[in-house]
Image 1 (cartoon, rainbow, N blue to C red):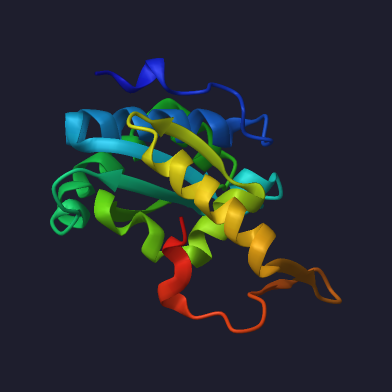
Image 2: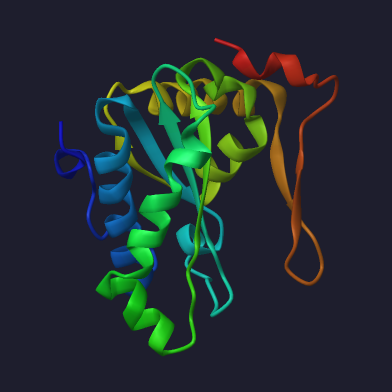
Length: 175
């Protein structure tokens, strides 16, 4: 199944070249992993719309049947992206938007609450063939409501996640 049916073109708040680079990279991920590619989400500065010339592209890719060799397998896709026009156009202006995918096995989604919080807060699910990533975000939403998880802004623009009283990392999979 090609990713195009599940890719929401132009939904990222960055209405510029970053969106084109992300779409191109997701297409390369689809070509590289085929039916093993279940979900892709972008988060970080690109998803928030405040990317700068040195910003990378933070992505999560959920794979069926293990993510162990994915970091080796994705290298040709990263190199191919650098030769494509969306990336080249940004590079000509001094922007080098390197994609930094994080790979998860489908069984690990709930184990990564920090990144799930980032996706929930200001990320974008681009592909979700099985609905597993959206389901994990829905579980997280319930957890936010019941546990009092909140994003706390800091002077100067930073923030941290207050996980609420009594939080333990193994509780991330609350149904």
